[in-house]
Length: 175
Image (tube, rainbow, N blue to C red; front, side, top):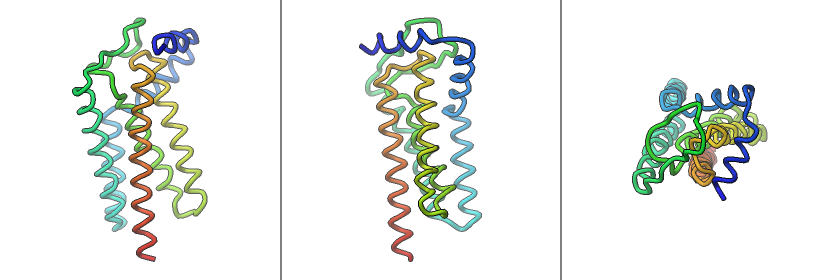
């Protein structure tokens, strides 16, 4: 079934989508994610927001470690259904790009909008849509099975939701 889904997605391949999803690949790369986590932790430290900085560091470390542990525990091979535009190494399950994008970008969106009340949900939603774009790119590029991406999204969205819930709880306790 997963093979049929990937082949169906691949049937839409073309130069414009190739470029769009190569672009999406960029936002899940380790150096980009490490830069984002470091920048956000430093930003919050400069603002004397230690809890927020801690959240970024913890989510960053878990997002790096958890997929790697699961990849080696499952040792699932990547799909090899067509010649791909990128050639990642390592195992397939779960998608690290999906984990990272679902953990970081909704958290970033929420953090940028949190002082605007209800708009924080909009920020989270925009980040979530971006995470879906990054994860779907992994399928389009043919480097992950659909269940790899789904598992990555679940792990990442759970992290961002837990981080936000923890920050909200502490903000309410300090009010």
